[in-house]
Length: 249
Ligand code: ZN
Image 1: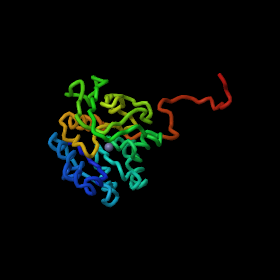
Image 2: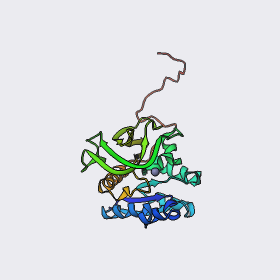
Image 3: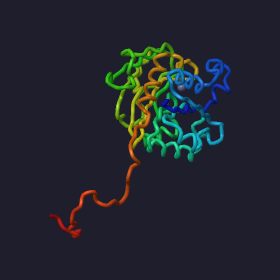
Image 4: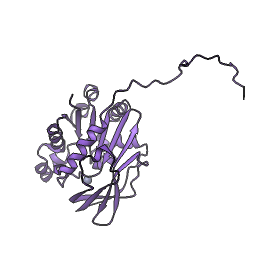
């Protein structure tokens, strides 16, 4: 069965800035949904200004993997929706956070840091993303490095918790480096952050970038696992409790 992906985009730059609208006539979400569909996935899109930001309970419950692109309107995202997305991630929905999504409410909630900050420079410079984990399914079919001719720079220090898996390290023409692709596991959910994707550079048209996102969707798709059991439980093996809460033996 096809993987069900919801591509969420705040969809502000494309509407408010002519050049960005021309670069992504169907929005960044439309561009991403299109290459995911070509890869055999079932892609649905959702944007900030829709009711519930397009992320109703029905949509979230029918989503295997949620992709998140946001930049100028992180604060407009309703905390209640963030809580719902977070709960779905813990319950197994995959989450892929792109580029400036590093400062989104949902990414900060996942990271538990409330910072996610870093250095940046928007002049259009070369970025080389080096694969630093050649065993990982997200780098399947990629060369050892992806060269992006023109991107926004993100530089360390990047205020994230140490990733569970670090896959990409970026070098920028101006000298900075950045952890640019990494994974977290949160209960039943898998989370992948991928750095490239500034709105003005057409990065989402680059085949290797598309390949990373396609691979990441496959990786982040939920597996079959029962609902997690919590709280006080009966023992699974019969035994006679001592009943003595003070015993040190
Ligand atoms: Zn950017």
